[in-house]
Image 1 (tube, rainbow, N blue to C red):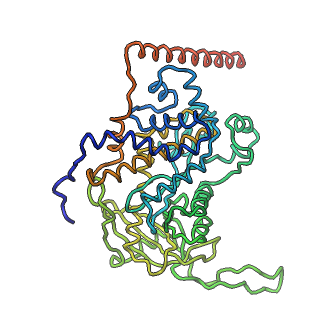
Image 2 (cartoon, rainbow, N blue to C red):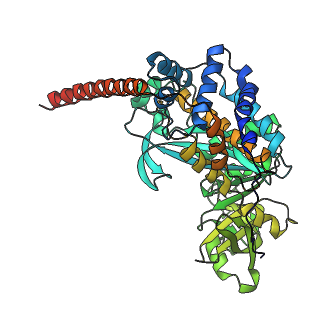
Length: 472
């Protein structure tokens, strides 16, 4: 492996950065016609600017205070635009897919699926529940989202999003009042995360504007055979992580309808013939492989140096309802440093080279980077809206903000080969209009916040006293 001895040369000049505001205007104009009213177009522009700014807290109130001062009408207008505004997320995202196709599309592009969770206080936000929170790594009060991304050799971004509604939120009548308050559509049905993922893939595939061949996902999706079969059914190849306990057959076992024993109903269902080899756990198969079956490969150059792992691949038969299913690839990846094992299944063709699976093993991480950049720099988790519509509107605009920075990275790549998305945001934030913040404006903002804090105190105190009175 060659050592990179010199840093990539940065040749950007201030004049190259000054025009970024105009580029943001042009970017907004792509989506502007999809908002029905002038006020919606203005609010969408302000919201994008706020998400892309250097502000740390990007809640609605904080963004409006920064851009327009303590204007209560402006804050309410923005809250209405996000939480209740009648504008079509689906249409905007379909336009977004066209833009992604222009900049990132490759015929063997990878659609990536993953979940991202958002810790929340209280129980009034749509879909909130004490459940496993990936961001915190423990059971916590949070909302769960499922996201679809896209990765190619040119870059990566997010494409779509769905809020996960826990089953009781959909089916339990005790949640009826909360559903109504949060504006959950009456026709919403309970859907698992794999079902939400499939819904997004199906919509994207039906649109046909963004080419791709692969679907990469973690074991939350990979352990669902129905989901994998649906992906395969539309001609896509999955590269799905699966739990170590996943069973496969090394060879397809013989199956038949068991012979009738002369009493009881005659058997009609096909079963594995008695005496055939049993299916095995993928971790046990990995442990039994001789050293010669493994080979070491460079996955990619990471920010801290080369990422290397040992790989082994073999053809196996997947299990479906305890019966032999499709013939697939089992891909095993072992960490060189700590021997951590990752297991994947893929329906790729028999002649797929190992190098392709090595490449795919590095294609799931980018969506995690999208979440990291989105939450740390684009306000993805800063929303303070409680409604169904508000969550989806906010995430849609976060997706657009992220892709604008991806486009900047690509356009400035010749002059700044090592430009990262956080650095692209810094360049843009340096030329976005900054409001003048004098002593009077600071006092007005402080006065507004103190009034809001006092109103919240009065509301909490009233509720607490009512609770104490009930307990007496």
